[in-house]
Figure 1 (spheres, rainbow, N blue to C red):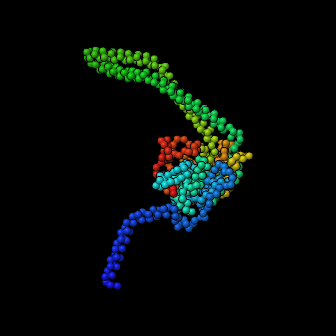
Figure 2 (cartoon, one colour; figure 1 turned 180 degrees about the vertical axis):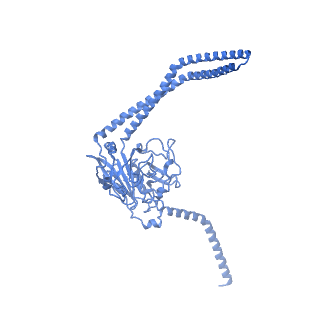
Figure 3 (spheres, rainbow, N blue to C red; figure 1 turned 60 degrees about the horizontal axis):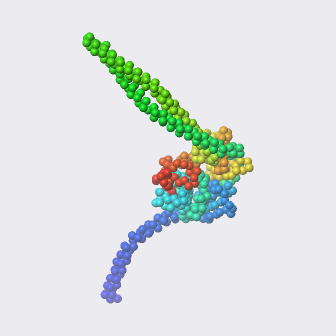
Length: 500
């Protein structure tokens, strides 16, 4: 090869290198963005090695070959990564899920559905789409449709197949029990004397009593409103008289003070001339006091009837308001008796808690035999009426006694049983646990229990929902109730989010 040929080849290679570098410089920004997006997506949907190493076998969607009844509970297995929906007769739907990854684990425990939203967007994770969302904590844990890589991969939520989530959301009633178990768990039939046995007569009387007390509450409210209006009218009529009396009393007070000064001046006078002037002033002051007292007596006599009427109207308004409040409380309690009763017994606090319709109605000490020994966590659910009371199932999700042995250790006060059992309906429940109530429990939740011996990263990373404000009304009364989305009657809580 000649020197000239070598020189031309070198020049050509340099030119190709320059063009290649230029092309790389042009491609690099787009490539970097693409690589970054790919890396982010991979981090979101591809399991970390620690999770992949313990990947459960992929499960498929299952539907029971029968007509499904009302969905009573959902059981999520962290170990097997699937969710199973049960009605009174057993399994009706099952699908794979993807729960929280390491550090953001989905908490194992007992929850209920608090909100439904078919088109939810995350307010924490870049407006991420989380369709067919079923909220189970106000701080941001939910079941929703999402990608399923076959292992835990979310930020704490429970992802379900999109189609499965679409079908499920319409079957779920607000307040449906959601049990997140560290291992596989399923409901089993159970009977025990401690489980509530309703009385047909008491059940039959509840609606009529609730209706009668609701009417009484309405009548008391109307009476209180009328009494308040009457008191206001009487007060308006008496107002000018009250002002006139106040003015006369002020004048009389000042006249009394002037008379006192004149009498002091008379007593201090040393000369006849000074005494004469002081006597004249004292006589004028005394006449002024006498005249004002006469005017005041006449005004009080004329105003007495109206002032007494205004005072009586005010007293009547207070009494009517107290009666309205009592009637409203009685009607509210009667209405609550139409709702399933929920009881929670904690070995930690040695207390029994009762709720109806999300409202806390009772908290009393309870006796637990061998209180220093673990009792486990068990959920007893009244799934249907039976010939003699209710048919119950039990789900155990934590180590300790079996369900029946746990009931054997509990001594529920007889007066509590007498007040709850006669009107217990299907969907009533009894929870026994070593755990106390979780901080997520508030005035807009059922009992929330989280297992302290299981990872709670997805729950611990979220703030307690103490600042949540809610729309008026009870979400249990309306499955469409969505307090975080909507118009002026709803409130939106910032900086709380869902976990992908």
